[in-house]
Image (cartoon, rainbow, N blue to C red; front, side):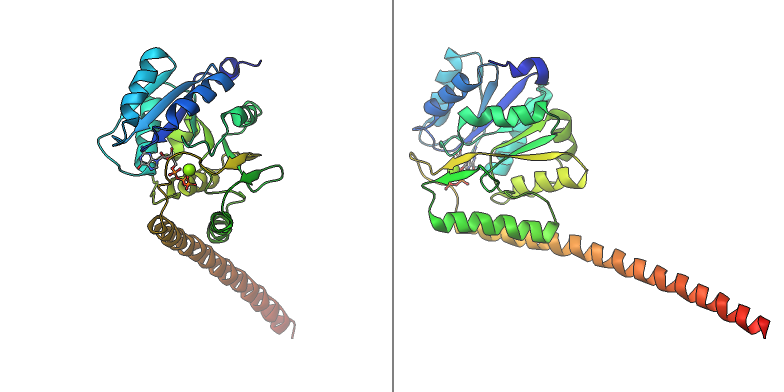
Length: 274
Ligand SMILES: Nc1nc2c(ncn2[C@@H]2O[C@H](COP(=O)(O)OP(=O)(O)OP(=O)(O)O)[C@@H](O)[C@H]2O)c(=O)[nH]1
Ligand SMILES: [Mg+2]
């Protein structure tokens, strides 16, 4: 089996958790078996169900498992930003986002790592590219996810099919360059990191993944999250497209000025000849 650390360096898989007591052992075990060379950081927001304590027990028994205890529930974006900074400060070369709830398959992590080895700066696990799939996910959620990606593509012009997906891998230097200026709000962190990477010209690659509906625990995704994300995306889009329109108007004006100059020169030539 290929050992990714020889080509990619030190790899950190980050798992944010809030009330994932029924999942945390399953997911860390699967990640450890699938890619034994990676370290895992569990970023727990003081889960009332004791996920943080269980994480400490797992960490005590395995050097590759680490825990970041946060004071309280602050949302996914805050948990990821704190975890990214934690990992970057400790010199990890690759940082990966991974849900705890079994929606992402650790056995597919190699697809993201292979793409990094092949030269990608950022890799997104994608449900909506050829070979990607969703299992047991309600049609409503599928439509919402697809619509969210289409809307974001339309607003921002990012050539990525699954913008909101939560299984993502970054090279450390790229993450350092795109981590500021992240708004959050539901899948906001996924959108903002993808948008920042795209704007800065980094190579973003999508790899197909299987996404499964969680079997244990409850979702933290609510309509408030969707509404906030939609609002932010639209505001960003208007700003982005607004700038494009301004530059287009500028170019048209320059073109017209050039044309007027030529016409003027021709007229004066014709008048001189007379
Ligand atoms: N630390 C931390 N983790 C969180 C927070 N909210 C969600 N998570 C974790 O982030 C991951 C994704 O959250 P989910 O509730 O599964 O949200 P989702 O995947 O967008 O929605 P579903 O598809 O319904 O599961 C899970 O591992 C959660 O435990 C939070 O406020 N803090
Ligand atoms: Mg989930």
